[in-house]
Length: 250
Image (tube, rainbow, N blue to C red):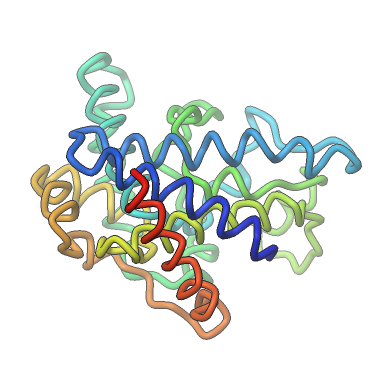
């Protein structure tokens, strides 16, 4: 990870937090900025690589466990409510109901157990992602060059899936910069299991206000950090200094 790139992205998020902390749309603004930063930079990072195999109609990886930050989860909870309001009587039932059913099947499962279960993502409808414009960074950062290998891996076969390293690296860079900015502002910066996090936000809308007040209101869905997934503490401390500068300048 480039320290300069990390601090630059973290400063963008810190400036947004400093200037918009009172906005009712803060979580949407943070998530949208994270998505925009990813999309604005991924083409330059992957222009030298072959074309991806990912396309509509291939939901092979959509049975994997997905983790997301609090702003992403609150944005998606709002997105789910809007879809339910626009399409209240679809043959598939309300989208919120699909998320709750999926959560019952997957809650508390490890990443390995989730893959073995092969529970489909509740947002995949007729082979397409119904939340695609608002999909989390984790989904944006998981990309493959071999559709067949993905399908084989999801059936339990031991295959080497050729994934795009730049996608994964950029996802981590943007997500960690967002988390560092949240952490320096006193907001919960952990990662949460997507299905459970959305259900929590749907069932108790005040969880978003509580999160903005400094509570870890999505704690039941928090993913415990493994040693390999721990952020660079020294880098976060240095970034915190830049966050303070951004807040002073806002």
